[in-house]
Image (tube, rainbow, N blue to C red; front, side, top):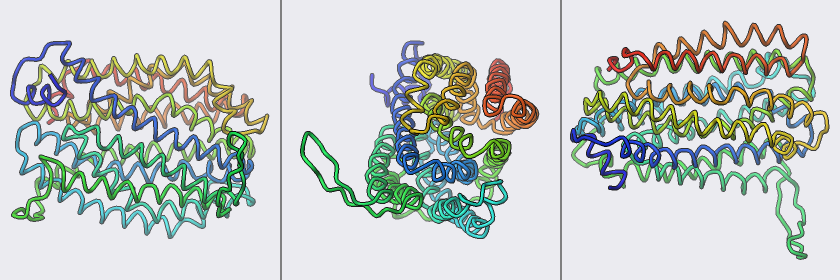
Length: 467
């Protein structure tokens, strides 16, 4: 049977064997994992390009990374309230209601991203100073953040449209478009970041055009790649999707009940993103006094580590789709099995990536920067973080499971507790004694505690009763 037949069988109430559920989980997870990995490879290459411009340029982007994560996280939070309802209605075979959610979700996305854009524009000049950045890197940091904020409507539509396609069961198209976006990002950045130059390939000299925009070029390249991607994403959602494409006879009508539910689902996730990214900003302030090398090493190490945990996010996305549709179909028996299957798969995959992270840490950080001190610190902290990967996987995938069930409030509170009660106080204490390594020791401890909390929640029954 094909993946779509397994999903249809589940929605129709048919029994699925354990092996069929495993195959379905893997088939939905692989495209999402590939998309997440390609996204991180893109960031990895971006960071490597900027890193070779100098530690100051790298530090300017590293300084703003937590703030851009917050903006992107808020965009993701808004989409959650609508994409979960799409999964539930698809699972219940109420496709007309699912299409109504699509139209309302896209309209809300435009309005919300416009508000975020205006907020970012108003604060972009002062933000680097608030974060404790040195005077020499503030200008580049400010420009980078401004361009990022101007592209937020494109990012928001990309996230929302992609999430709706995924929750309908179509993981392939969003994954392919994410990969396309990554390839375009590398091409655009190679032209926009560097000056015109000549490279030698197999003994032949090739002239490569370049705008020489540095940090600004990195932001513009990413924004242009996202713009190309969102055009295709909306096309496949609104024109080609069998279940969700627009119908002439159907109009945009706002449903108070559906909007209220979207708000109820999105608000805890938005709170979680603010909490998590606010904690990252506080971590940046803890790292900032350690010097530009520490800021750059911290930023590069976060990028390098992402190669290990992004497969977990891919499996978590698949879990949201699977759980959402099983909840919509009222298949509580399947919901429990899929919850543990997806979490188990995530822990298995990220245990393997954690081992690879420990072994190849010097090489991974070495690609990003030629600076010996940055490489030394980066290798040290990556090897510390490798021990947290299995439990980090448990929290990432379990979060996707809970979202699919409509359980967003308690997981958000758990994240708040682990970040603000465990990680930040411990990082502030240990950084004074062990520098950057102390910050990452605190991160490792907190991620292990978070994973345990999420597994305890998964063992219970309450999350399956939320919807």
